[in-house]
Amino acid sequence: METTNQNTPKQTIKKENTSVQAVERALLLLKLVGESTTPISVGELAKQAALNRTTAWRLLGSLKNQGFVEIDAASNGYQLGYAVHQLLSHNDSYGSLIRRARPVLEALKDDIGETVLLSVPKHDGILAIDQIDTDHSVRLVDYSNTISPLHCTSNGKILLSLLPEKELNVLLEQPLASHSTYTITDPEELRKELAKIRIQKIGTSIGEFDENENAISAPIFDKRENLVAFITLGGPSFRLSKEKLLQLGNRMLEAAKKIEDQLD
Image (tube, rainbow, N blue to C red; front, side):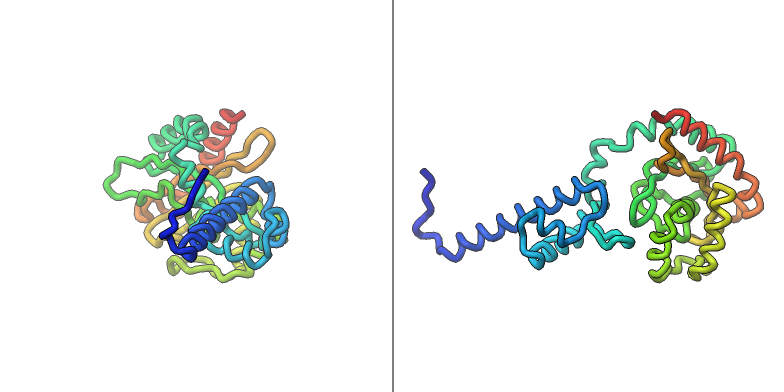
C-alpha cells in the first residue's frame, strides 16, 4: 500500500497532483486533435475531453505556444502543429517520398545546374524536406526542414491557387508580410497571380521571398489526385534570371510527372 511522507506539506502534494492532472488533460487534448480528420473547435474538444471550455482553451493555448497545435485560419479549429513533425522527423516520416523523388531531383540539378528542393504543403506554409545543392559557390541558402510562407514563394503560391475560394478569402484577409521589395502584399494583385498559376500549372517567385533569389515550382499529385509535394528549382537572380526561369516551365512539369509515376 502506498503511503505519503507525513512530513510533506499537504499544499505541496496538492500542487503536484494538480500539475500531473494538467499534463494528462493537455495530452488528451493533443490526442483528440491528432485523431480528428479536420480542424476541431475548442468547444468540441472540451466536450470530448469532459473539460470546462475555459480549461480546455488554456491548455490548448499552452500546446499552441509550444507549437504542438495550431489554429486553422479558415475554420478557427485546432490541428496538429509543426512541433509534432519535428518529433516525428527522426522517424523519417517522409523517407519514402524522398527516396522516390531523389533520382529526378538529381537529374534536374545536373541538367540545369541549380539547387533543387522537394517540399510538402503544411497548413501554415511549405516545409522543405530535401534539398540538393549545385556545385556553384553562390547558391540558395539551406532551406531543409524549414517552413516558408505561402504568398511569396513559388511552391506556396501553387498551394494558394489550389485552395477553395472560401479558404483563400480567409487567408487573404490577413496582412501579407513583406519579405522583400518585390513581395506581393496586395491581395487583389496576388489573386491575379494565382489565376495565372491555375492555367500554367507552375509557380514562380522573382525576388519575392529573398531579393537575390529566383525560383520556379511544379506540383506533385498522387494517383488519387491529392496534392502531396512540390519540386522547386532556384538560384541567385544574377545567374537564374526571370527570362531563363520562365523557360523552365515544361521541364519542371515533366520532372513532377516523373515523380508522380513513382508514387503508389
